[in-house]
Image (tube, rainbow, N blue to C red; front, side, top):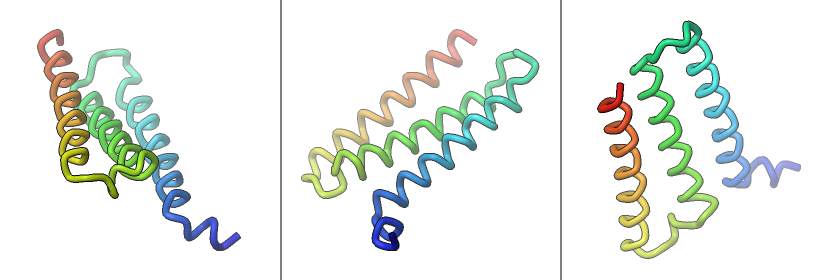
Length: 92
């Protein structure tokens, strides 16, 4: 049992679960009036980007990959995050 708790993937999974709950609570409490709230949107998107980074690094084993793959995945994630924020603020 203790070996499962010490496993890094178990720790990352627990962090992802906790962060998902935080994201849900942020969106639920911040958007209770059903009005677009840019602060809540940015916070939820930042949390989603952090979760995606954890999944890419730990569950897709990119942290042990060559540098070019690390740079490519980080660039893709950053580009997607900027694109989503850009679309959100342009069409707000």
